[in-house]
Image (cartoon, rainbow, N blue to C red):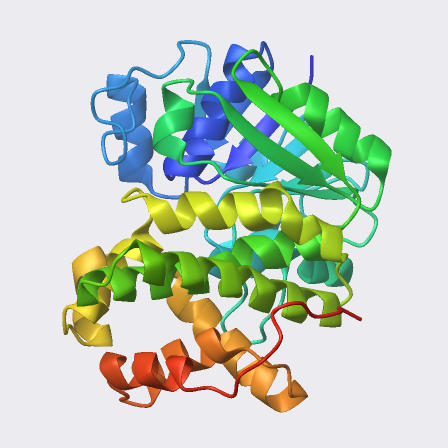
Length: 334
């Protein structure tokens, strides 16, 4: 059995750590905050995210990163995407080059728009890297509802190793070699889910949401392929799959935040209300500006960007989208 360190005891990090522990792997869940560590040691629960659920007795907790990494073969990065860069810089000083690093957060660095794999290439270029993504709410994984994920790595053997590590009777993992597509699918679907929330907040119905989701995946694919991703990836779990789950569930903080904007809240009010990083807001800014510079057509992203960062009204954004030049639905991606 592998020894694994999961860095980050948020909802998703905790859910993955519990899955690995139930699969029989020696797993350490590392958290930076001492108060959280003491609470989890005392109660055997993650009181903030799953106050009613007992964690597996054999799951270990740590508040010391160096100790948590001792002897590990695999590290799971479960911090927010905004914390990935600092976490990777810390690992650079502590991690042997043969340890596999798996990122399970979904988003882009707000300052440079970097994907996690790009950070890894700069600071830990010799460590095998994979991304584990797909339609997966932590709340459902914790109670072992059937879930399907995709593990992407340039090294297919690494992806297969993680597939074996995570899979069980309620968790099915597929493999893929398209790291760029897996990362961008997970990041950009948050923009579309935010837009779906706005539509909900405005009181529009299923017709409107179906249109936004369908044209949203076309937009995600267009951008992803321009960045070097494979078009097929966006038809799978990292693309359509993750888009569906994020757009249709109230577990999604991106959708919840969009609903508040649709009901008239300002960006500052929404962030105070949600009180967690809303990756869709970060991604809208990063991708909106990147697509404008590169000339990639992303009308939904630009409409949301206009609302969030240019004081545009949500009603005007809808009118703008509906009044665009008429086009053929099917396009060829290059």
